[in-house]
Length: 218
Image (cartoon, rainbow, N blue to C red):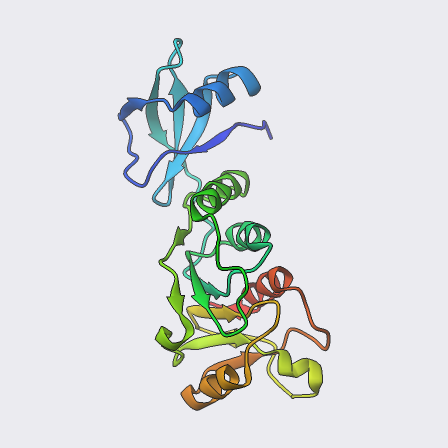
């Protein structure tokens, strides 16, 4: 299959639209990929598109038959040192949105969310999805409704017998490098949140997120 560039435009994209071409997009298409024809996407749809000869405008053509492979999952996570890697994996696995949550053991408190948004867009372009996950506003653990949450339960690594999958859940929660605190585990248990096992070893948070997402059966 021919490697046609894919570029995220916005969520209001539609056939017949002509818009100014961002300088970085024009450079990427004309100088790096050496083409003016590409696939533009946003809002769950993909379109054939063309960059004008002078590189100033983008014209959106017909909608393609490619359906969006993303899902309805919302990943709740404690910001970590390698938040960029976590978001790349989550985007590639099709999550709908990501929700940063400050937990007791969260240490990465100064994330550049503007940079993270660019990383998510690039991952969406590369992973053949037609949508870009939304980064929701950061909240505290105490503000999370734990009732319908599935969480990666590291207690499985210490002998707890837990299920390895969960069905029909929308929210999945991954803890920080230091794991969830005793009080946070108590809050999960009191709310009836579903803890799932990711195996008998302790995983890095970004890997735990990828495995946990793959174990939710929609």
